[in-house]
Image (cartoon, rainbow, N blue to C red; front, side):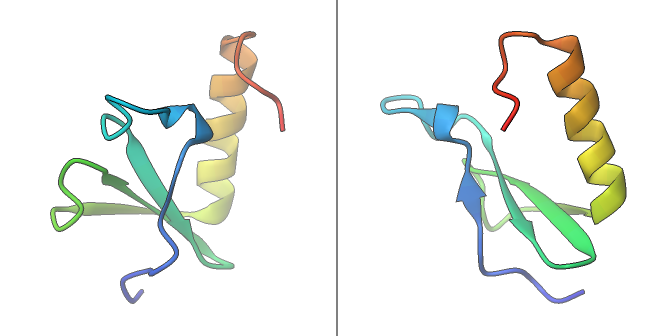
Length: 68
């Protein structure tokens, strides 16, 4: 997989310490994750379905997280 160019941070990042989060970038088949404080550093890449299941599990276990 090539390095993605469509990185985005969570809307929860906010201002101030908004760089203390992860960024994600997607393709039809994979999702890449990186540390927003070190964007030139390592990137983790997961199959899209696996990452979606991970996010769904997080949402289910934290009722205060948006479901959209």
